Image (cartoon, rainbow, N blue to C red; front, side, top):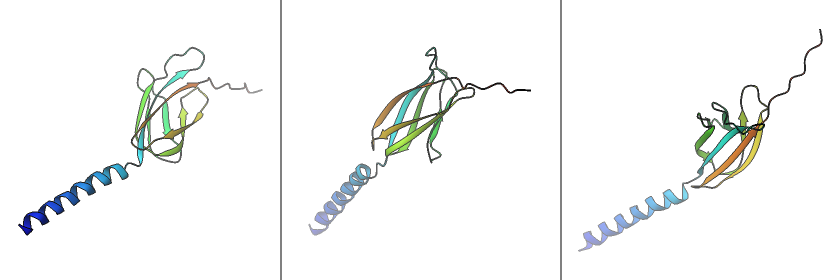
Length: 116
């Protein structure tokens, strides 16, 4: 009888620890979004989207969409870049275990002609 009680208590404790670690251990969230051209709204495939100060990021697909899994929770800054366009920084709030969605419009980089 005592062994059965001990077994049940151990199993209950392990179940609680497993559940608590999953709930308390979620220190990341998910960021989804789309990157488009500011002048015409067309998607920008292959744009780089990074969480500033980390190696976490993604590239946009053919429709300009991206998904960043395991983004650090809390206030973050997305850094979006694409060849020929101005780099843009966008603040986001990543909720642990949640998802935040953003739409980013990039503008052409204007270069000044050099004088000869």
